Image 1 (tube, rainbow, N blue to C red):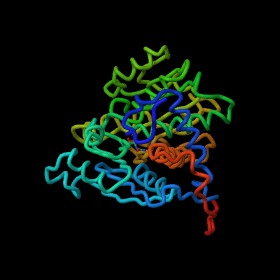
Image 2: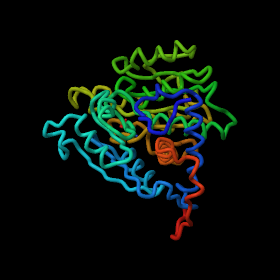
Image 3: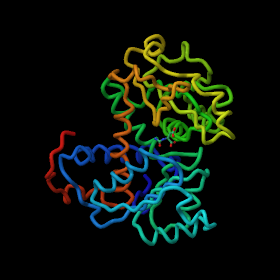
Length: 335
Ligand code: NCD
């Protein structure tokens, strides 16, 4: 199995099943802290630099929250225009400087492979929070954690999973990373529903087919949604040449209660990395799905804290010391 301590987390390709099992196990150990049953200060004094050069709500805040929940401090910079990258500084130089200030770095950047380039200049572990349309490894891990915990309710696991990925599969980095992770399991059936122009890149499809999984590529929902999990995604407008071009593909696969009842199974779990585009022209997941027990989207976002806590504990080598550094929670909490 890979060594986590001191390692960068740049792509899901660096994990095998044992490494993933380790991450998911440590993630589950974080539950009492995330639920404010106990505090953990194993990272007391450590500093995370959270560098977000592209818009983010969940990923940025949950990285920071995860680090704080382990007792560490967070420094943050947001937007390329507010950093010296806009003065022409290279990613390598920025990495040399910021890694001198910190113990670990989380970073999101609009350019593919930029986080790996940055990592070459860093003396501390760098965790990829999304590099353009390439990858989003921490999202894929939290997606996997979510699939595992949602499927456990039906006595199912990751092997034999029947999943539908829907929407902008060309530009969506979350579905790229998730597909690569799923390829490590047994007998997965993956149905990819997207407009023809936004199909999953061939390299990702072949990772699945080479591993013997069944892949169905289609541009229609009818007859294709009877699955364990439906994973809806947003049209990634920022990856198109113009808003007008993205508009061409918006709203093709809006999921609402009617369509769910008609085409999904009784227990199909609905996931989405979020943000869901709720504007009427997109309406990716209608609000009429909100009171459905199988709508897992907010549990999924919550799981991001657990998985990111686990990755910090593992890369900083404290995963076996959590229970030695606990304190009671002093404030009211109804989590
Ligand atoms: C995703 C992303 O940034 O790739 N968001 C997230 O991190 N949860 C998905 C998206 O923006 O559509």
